[in-house]
Length: 441
Image 1: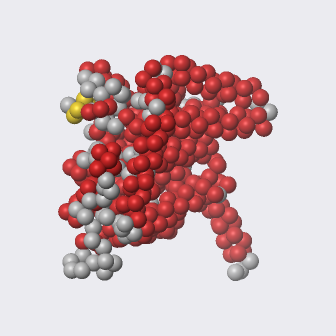
Image 2: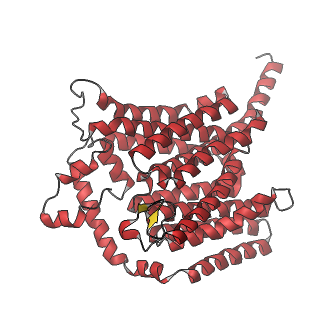
Image 3: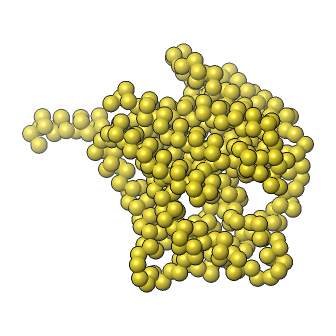
């Protein structure tokens, strides 16, 4: 089965790459098509890898949490009076939302199965870096050919900003920040294993993806994504430098600090006037964000069990307290905060179940054996942190393609950490069993 791992590690990155090209699979139709592709891809991955009983046993808790969250949403479709007293808006959009949720679960499961294998995390990230560079090249071509639209879809008031293959610049900034962070993790691991053979394409792609991802993030004008990316890169460099310093390789530590600082300064020096102007508008945009959060928090409190997936826009139209508020927020169709979005979609039970699911997926990181994945796993965790930060002030995870990317990284992170812990425990269990057998127990 080991020789099937490269093929299995390729499937989900390719599907997500197609979603990123297709406007991030934003919209009901594209989201449904993406969900079908994700489920089909997950079935192929599971058929290729045929996960062991140990994997299914370890993954049982996240699987149960995901099933409970899906059941909470699906229970609203039961005929008759709702047992919880919910009266969700736009019930016709619920089947599509359930399909997208299943698609995300499929990405999560398939990625966990890949990450469980010893080389799965590295292979998937290497593939994503290459595809991310291709996506960036396509985005730059689209920008050059028609800066006012993407695939013929007008960008509206974002015409003066680089949005990649999306129509939202902040979501694109988050995507490229993730690309740069993952690339730095691979660059660090390539440096540490510089005397071991590595594919030439990986050695070429990783540094280019680091510089290209950071530069693309900067020109989107997304302030949150750029600051989060710089913070993640600095923390990764500090972690690597400190490890090299403790290993008495002070020259290597100094080199990585100098290299990271040079790359960051180079990118910042190339930042255009439009991006600098965005930072000068922080106070003005911050006031608008506070207004948005206040309004949607009031909307969430009005329905503790949620308004239902797809019900945000309809509920908002009936919740404006004044004409001034309507004039200010009529064009805003997102809470610009992932926690508020979960509350509005499914209420407190849904929010708590999703937090429990995320905690269960990150729980294996506590094992010391997870550190054997090195900077590759650390960069995946950093990329997840970037997505959380970006989605806390913007709409990054409201886009199906970005949500699927988060699910893939979560699955790979869980699989790498849990798989490493399982492998570290297996020799101990075998030793204990052989000792017990020799003792006649």
